[in-house]
Image (cartoon, rainbow, N blue to C red):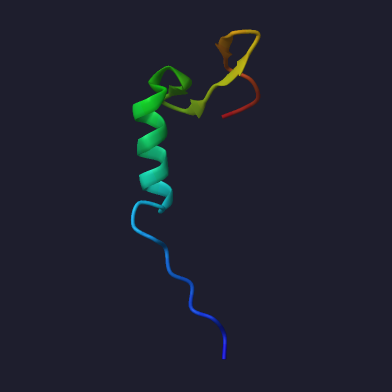
Length: 47
């Protein structure tokens, strides 16, 4: 019998995303997550 996977409360992707937004809103833009390097946030890569 296969094990049943259960998410603990507050561990869903949407919950984690909201916590990240609350802690570091400057790290997010409408279309991407920014990267922190050399002390500033940068738009690296493609959205």
